[in-house]
Length: 261
Length: 128
Image (cartoon, rainbow over all chains, first blue to last red):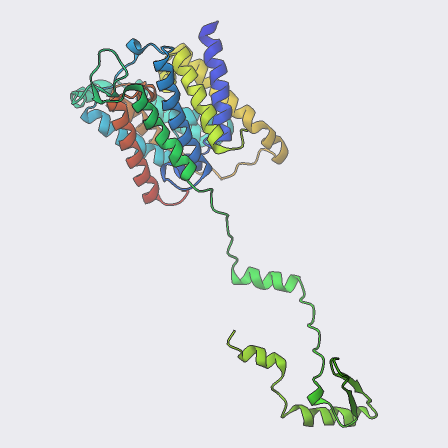
């Protein structure tokens, strides 16, 4: 029963969190691999960092038996495999685990194609072909965390903790995703302008200097000048305005246009 | 609390660490070798992601965000082949567990994978 219960519960939680971290769609992992400021990048960095931190802590507390830790030797096959793995993940946008999650929540056809490809090569006997590439160059851990295996750097579990803290700090420093700005085409701008009519601008109050002869200008002390148009004859008024307005074209509106600001 | 990316990563790491303690691994590729625990884990990952996406699907309807074309499927298939091939090259299925425990080979694998993935994504362009 426990063979299925514990992996089942952990798998359910992992699937939920992968979906919340937007890693179930291929674009999410591509954003993270491309180091683009995005939620998947921050989720991946913090998951890696916290994962190393927690594992180091559990090993230090002897919850994880350090004798059973498998040490993967560094070899040409490992480096080449890493390169192929990264390129493949960038091409398809999934890792095996996120492909299973994508089958449930993302682009299911693409995730299914990824899993079919994984299964096909996993069932082929290709592992033996690459045996010469797996001659170990270096079999050690980064820090002294096991009893027997050699290590590269001093520091023990504290070194692992510091190493795990680096991706977490990186994730904190990654700024939030940029606000998406949509640049509209000229046609779209014209269409929007036609849809919402612009209200006509209010006519500016006539300046006292442009007043006609029939106009009375009342200037009181401490008050703005008050212009009263008597308007005896509409035609004479219009003719008078054209005559008077011509030399006074340096209206405040034009002054504003010519101003340095 | 789940809305902050730092917490999402924290809970994901907690699940991975629990998997390392309770199961000894957290790799889904073992499911293709019919490891019973890996099959259960992989199936539950699919179910969990489905449950997580269910509220949004009920609200919006089952409309895919991007249209699936045969080119995208072919790319996904080739990428999947590459993923398995990479693990066969490395010769060890439990790479992520080895990474967490500080194995030098696994860190070399992770760094070259990051370099390869970065180059692939940048060359292929934005969101293919």
